Length: 366
Ligand SMILES: Cc1cc2nc3c(=O)[nH]c(=O)nc-3n(C[C@H](O)[C@H](O)[C@H](O)COP(=O)(O)O)c2cc1C
Image (cartoon, rainbow, N blue to C red; front, side):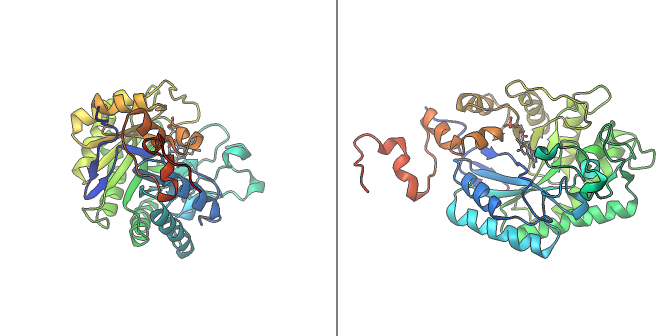
């Protein structure tokens, strides 16, 4: 049996050994955006997880665009230098290709780390002003964002492009834009958060204008051979919110402005929304995106077993899968998936004797 999950795939000019990605996961462990030894450990471990594509956590393009005081950034030379160490380390010791998820938290910025409560920062916690498409808070008790002006939009657009330049300079293999989970670009698209009545709000076409401007600015600095993707929302799971139809429109628009792939996630537009928790809950929307846009599609959300991931790819629901919590639980998830599907996966030479093929009769030396 040949595994579809473990078959290679190309994103732009980047060759990936299999279709498994580690989903981006905030670690809330940076200092003014600067990565520390935790990132070396965490990402170093996941660079050898069996996933061919390791997407680094939401990395914010400006200081006020961070979710929390601990969020990673790429807006200063100090951020760049620290992340360069991490990238070099992962490339030297690991097998995965590295993508960076560039983000701006918008109205969800200035928040506590999850283990501190995950709510808006109080006056005593050094909060900062936030921006959004409209002056609507994310939920009760959240900061009311300032309505983004055209000057804010120009600054943010440039910040995305500058962060992408920094990312390429320090050796990232791919760039992914965060268009989901209620952060700035998603909030701009969602009618639940964007109530503007100027040319940047109203119809979906108008709500798309600013996010697409950002993509164009980033594409202009990311060479065509380097994959540029986006994580989008497949559904707001709320009346009056974005629907899978809107996701298809977005997917086509993103393809037209030169994106190489889309990752389908969902939820997070407002504090009240409850996202489904059933196995592979985004896969049906991903399948539609894939069929109707023709772009390479990855999906995420409650994918936990090798069999389930294999089925998603075999059945054409997505070209790739991303897993988050399963990799935290088992950083060798990809090795075990390969074993379950009788496939091969790269392991570091130091750990090669853990490969099941080497078990029978293998001499236990050393
Ligand atoms: C600790 C943690 C941090 C996360 N941080 C991010 C992030 O930085 N960017 C993002 O797009 N999603 C983030 N997510 C969402 C995951 O990438 C993923 O979409 C979600 O957990 C569903 O996938 P799963 O069921 O495989 O965990 C995070 C999830 C977890 C558990």
